Length: 121
Image 1: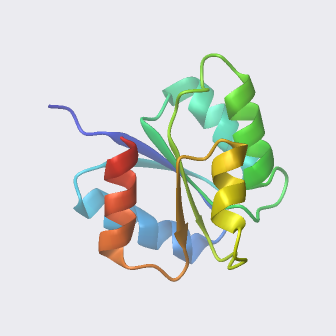
Image 2 (image 1 turned 90 degrees about the vertical axis):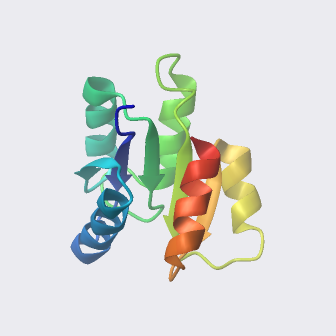
């Protein structure tokens, strides 16, 4: 069975590297982008199995990326797991209403992140 391909869209270099290490050690193939606009370009070319997405980024934030992915017939079904430091009480609900499939708060437990990803795949 081929490895699942995950696209990380995160503007913080250290967070990207941590996520890459965790996902690759759990047998996923990983590509990364530093903002939503770059993430959309990669998605068109590589069509990942799942996107791990931060909300606060330059150029195009996570909210804008979710909106564009969900409005496009070729990307509307790609699962999106938001990994964010947003701690507002209803943030998870907002993400799910916007089209996200999962939500993890930073800092997170590794097992929780992997479980959330696996439940969306």
